[in-house]
Length: 383
Ligand SMILES: Cc1cc2nc3c(=O)[nH]c(=O)nc-3n(C[C@H](O)[C@H](O)[C@H](O)COP(=O)(O)OP(=O)(O)OC[C@H]3O[C@@H](n4cnc5c(N)ncnc54)[C@H](O)[C@@H]3O)c2cc1C
Image (tube, rainbow, N blue to C red):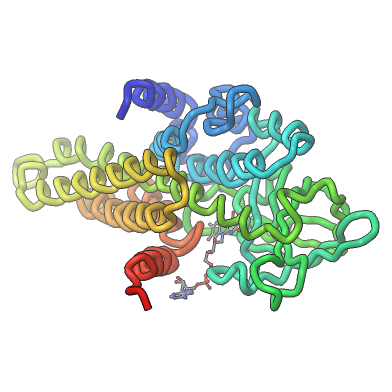
């Protein structure tokens, strides 16, 4: 890890410890992330890590973005998760595919935290098979597009001002060039958001359905090319998987931060439980899992910055890190015994937050499919 990235990590950690960690329990309890915190993250210059400097961003690497997500997630799983959805899957995608006018209109507000961003591809009947089963549809009119359908479980949906939304714009039978990405603003005619969903973890990062009822979308809101939404979607998915890996890494750090002092503090049989070899083995395994996940994610992050496009490696990082985070949260509960099982303590929240990383952004089963498919394709014998 080069010095610039280590300095950057310390800067984010300082911010996260001062501004995010004190709010974490309350955000989870109230299921609400204060709007003001978005602006503070913007003022700390963390929204546009991968956005080039001339456009107001930091012009840094995807690995730096992973580190920012990791440090924010260490302080609050929710904040790291909502932040990644905003800064990577909305803002980074919008920047990569937006034209000059679109960048000018949306990028400054997303960078400052004045706007909150979201991205919507999943639907009630289109989850893992999101491309094949997408039924949200936009029909071309003389003046633009008319969209109909429902999107589901959209992170930041209840609070977002700017949405990237994928719609079917040609018959599905015609293949992959039948989907278009659109930019949509809160309050657009015929567009409304559903109530915030009550969920297991990541409480405070709002999730809801989006409804399109003869929603009018101007031509100027097409993101990228018409019927080329799949390439917009696929180009974003690898970086999304990578940036999301910062989430489980941060949650694992939080689990280790919690249990190492506890092993000294808690005494049984007249001595700290950290003296017992089975407890030592558990914390050693936790650390090893964390370091293995962090090393894999950082290595893949470095490679991704030089040569994006190896989908299997981003999928492998996410698969490994997400499983490890769930396991570390369970280990933290075990080390803390009955106390670890109480809702007022941190390990339960870490477990609830960690589990989403095995599902969101493509499930671990789909990640295994991506890895195996690429490996088998590469090793296929010549006919
Ligand atoms: C908290 C949260 C936030 C989210 N945020 C967003 C967001 O911001 N934007 C967005 O667009 N979406 C979002 N999603 C949706 C998320 O991407 C989907 O939940 C995910 O892709 C899985 O789809 P699904 O839930 O419909 O599961 P399904 O596709 O119904 O899968 C159910 C089970 O079947 C398995 N399965 C499916 N197909 C196969 C197969 N071929 N082989 C083996 N197993 C298979 C899956 O792995 C899973 O275990 C979010 C979801 C949650 C819960």
